[in-house]
Image 1 (tube, rainbow, N blue to C red):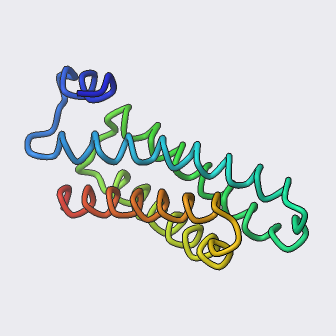
Image 2: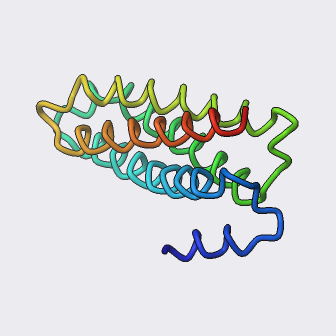
Length: 134
């Protein structure tokens, strides 16, 4: 089990039945945030950087949303008040938008292909957690 998984399960407010989904979303958000930053940097280093500005911006927006979502999830903000669900839904939207943008360039840029997959995985983990919280 990952260290963050150990910490989340050790937390006294571990919500019954959703701990594994929280862990999966926390880890997916962290990974996605990092991957998106690397993709944005790679976009700006490409010879066709001017054509990838929208992609880089989408990457950075997604990275910010994923990092914020991860922060909210590890603080174990009251899941029952709807705030966490709203944050998760915003993260899903950012991830889907970024994945769609990266997929437009994935055929020519491996970093965009990898990023699109990380975004799709993160969106899935966040959606799964939303379903567990409602």
